[in-house]
Image (cartoon, rainbow, N blue to C red; front, side, top):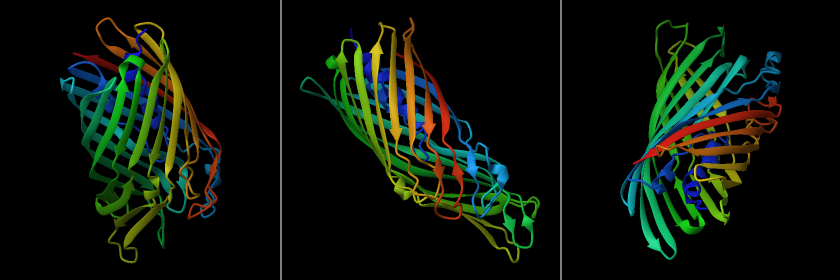
Length: 383
């Protein structure tokens, strides 16, 4: 039974859905694997939904609000994904991709920490273009990939900070920025045995976001605001091979340079005498992230395939926040229809380790172990 179609398209599912629960702020991964699929024109679109739940068991010592205890702080989020490929011939192809590459979103039942956060979120949307050149080599073919992308960051903060002489003051902040990066890769594949090895690199980016803040202290005014932060480079090695008729084994190791993420520094110019600029700092001081994935896939017949995978992600926290180890068990199915399309459905359950903040201004905050449910669906066509 041929296994090449599952090997070269569907097996990318655990790598993409796994990124939705990977460490740091990782979310979606650009669907560059569409470059390897048969067809002169290919299109695929889908979405991934993550529903995390993790509850506080202790509040920060500097702001010991007991109302936080037992409250979930992680928001549900959706990761869109779309890709279109144009093949010049069997030696060269280019693809455009769209996804949310990074993000985070938290909401609090009561003001959290010394900054009085009520909600904080950001999304980094990536638009990319990547090309691949293919060369015959031995039993298989060598591939070289290269491309560029633009990131668009949107950040929002709703807080109730306590100001000297004024007490708690509502504050809303919105920021945005653009950044540019590049990606490159090399691969080798032998279709007859469903073998492929890929090494993929994605550059880091720097965001200098600007925007405005608002407060009832100055009705109708848009106060200048800005923030700076770093997003990391990454390197990923993917391997897969047929192991028996209709069966495939696959795995990946990904390194992400999260140690560049030390702080998010935010400033709002109030223009109020005696107050001046309001400054806020999110402390991270993360270590590098490592994500390891492994699994098996099976083609039940020419139209139906399935797979299961297990992923471990090393937490990036060094004591300044709550991002500890995660485990993800995922499964998926591929259903090919009579019109040449392919429907992919998947789901997973992720275990979130308990954590405690032992450094910085939020020392004392702690969460119990939690869970996250993940769901995905996509559809692809080719001409």
